[in-house]
Length: 321
Image (cartoon, rainbow, N blue to C red):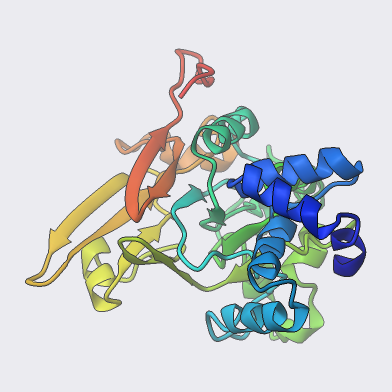
């Protein structure tokens, strides 16, 4: 596929499109318009490297292979094609806890608006992409759907999210891994159950999505480590790993904390969440003081920027950032 797509254009056409469109997003649109076929940003990123290597496929593939040794896979990882990770990410969009199908009704237009404003070169989803309320180790609300109906509704939502964000790094999480946790509790080995992608994306497998326990991404201001939840306090965890840190899990925490050692400034950030707090799935929080904070996080040139979803009196997004 790579060879057939890349050969739709002459070297001169590649040079013109890549030169006139420094943004991979814009270049992908120009390529797609020129040939009438969908060309992804991942294709463009590969083609830029191929072009820089004087059209040497072997050299380019070798460089991509080196980039993919970015981390050591762990048991339970579900890794797709994550060669789209840039050498140094300048704009990372972090999508917080979703808990589909109990997500906020305006999540998709909100995330599209954030994407279009900040043009991220990498997207991370912090985990709890699904809720699995009916399968919880805690009591489930009988007013909610069965596990099968929940899954079907979550699949429909995630299919739409995948259409907007086909390349995503996802974190293992307590809700997202519920099937694996239940299997372990019942003595069923992980090899006997479906992978994340087979469960959530049975139609196409979402090859551009990858699940892992953590992702460590280089940025202009030190590496940023992404995990679903922190170990200890936020800044202590960041200091222990000698990098900056982004976590989710705690829906009522949103924003960044900074600290400094004698030789560097570092930070830890919470993503907030994207849940529908009115759902029965979150009834446990109705009588607590700390309410969910709806929004997402951008990491711009290595610095965290919180993007809250501004809501009206009915709890719906006001339609602007």
